[in-house]
Image (cartoon, rainbow, N blue to C red):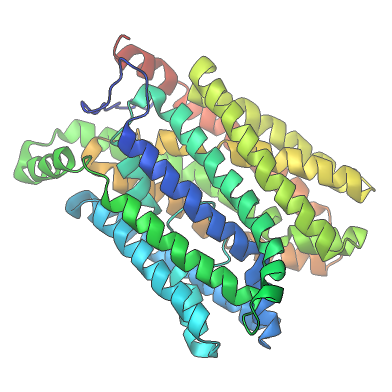
Length: 427
């Protein structure tokens, strides 16, 4: 049984039960950032196709962005514990602005490839400043008591997907502006929009104060030898057990998520318009589910609510390949994906609560790495099985893996909610 150590930050007004103003600003940044990401999910591949890029080149640049993020995530997580979180987030915003500016000014293959790979455009990160996500998640945790993290992180997740949905809709309206601005393509306008939006988020982050001093003092204390080795061991065991079961979830995500558009087209002959509409509705539904998850986490506990919802989503995944109508499959897909992704915020809340304040970047980076790396393996397995003519087997394998993930998640961390209640300050 894992002993989860719960840390509370004194600067949070726990008695009032309100989100600390700095946390609200970070959540606003997340929402604004996700709008641009939603636009790129719809637009980027289309734009590169217009420029004459091959499908292999389009897939390669998106994959390159993902691999770069996976490689940098653990380093940024660890060093943000030592150097502070804010500098990494500011650097990411500036980098994104610079990459968007390249998209505005140039169509050169090499420059665009570098810009897309560095920024992660087109990866649908749902507001995450990948690969600096560990730094931002750890920073947000510094302003929120552990008892409220499941709720607040779920709300933050909801804002991400609402932003993605808004971005997808905005991307579709850009052609209206193209007619009014002669010589400027709708694709270039999206890069312009993201450039301006990133400058806004950069300005908001500059105004955020706090959440760093205690962490830096704690890190120096740890380095001086005052660290309790038993506590350190317990934290490492908890983080590594979470990473181990995340591998199951990561492979399952990779088996289905990235190949869904192809599956919709191959099995039902769905058009790009139909698929795009399904994805936009899915983003919005996920935002709604995240709000419901926030309430469930607050009422029934983070772990119990996650396990219940993930079991339901796994059952729906089994149902999908058995249906013969695209309309029915779309409805099931929207519900299933919304349930699954709606728990992301609550899962992030657990990952940043497994360690003390000065090691949250480390914990968050291991959590993200253990999901994203196996996720990159899944599409290769699915592609191979699809090539053999098996359009159903990947769904059954993924469902089994996610059942296993939900069971192990509840079994290993079932004592987390109890410990949070025991350590929570009275209100």
